[in-house]
Image (cartoon, each protein chain N blue to C red):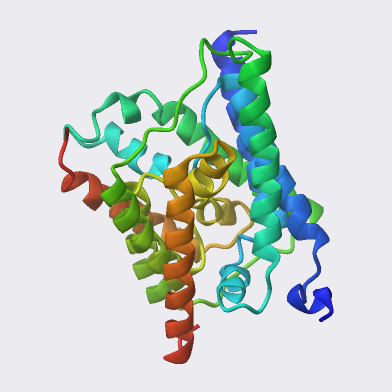
Length: 139
Length: 156
């Protein structure tokens, strides 16, 4: 099979695991997230804890066991923002999250489960990302 | 105190869902070496249509394809869950203006701070990033305050 097709299939499979997990854990329901933020249901901590545990296992062990990933030449690094942008951006992100009850992943995944109102959030996030880039200082 | 009062909707589906989310991030890393945060796609897609130098950087042009496929996978995964759930779709009763304004501010902030709940929360914490730990504490704090304020003002 063509390598590019295999690579694309690997990405879609990973995303599908992620999306199934978001739906199963009901994170695609803004009401559930808002209940967590209002201390009525602490389930979100279990979701985050489970996800961090699995990701930690992968990030900490795979680069020690393999020189490169199975379908690529190297392991990517997360690009970082400056400390100020990290703080200001995260503070704003939290305000938005507390208003609409979904973050980028659940907003996208919600569409797959028929939660159509979340399309409003996806479009709004696209616009927010555009405005951020439009006024960003390019280093 | 009975722990079940903290989890009125049960615990198993939360924990299992979280493990699957982390498995998705792990499989992506194992196979492609990519770090699978979700907010990046919202900037990366603009590189297809905008000539702005900011969006034409390799950070976006070199990752837009897999980021879009990853987002497509997210939709497929949730649709598969829907099939297991006998096609009972999910809906939300949050007012449209909250979905719109929250999405806009959230999208702007996530891109400025270079990460959201998956980028900083899952991937960042799992790679022991200090900035990510800071980001998570900040956005949890402002989200909790915002949700309480909205609630006190009679919002959804």
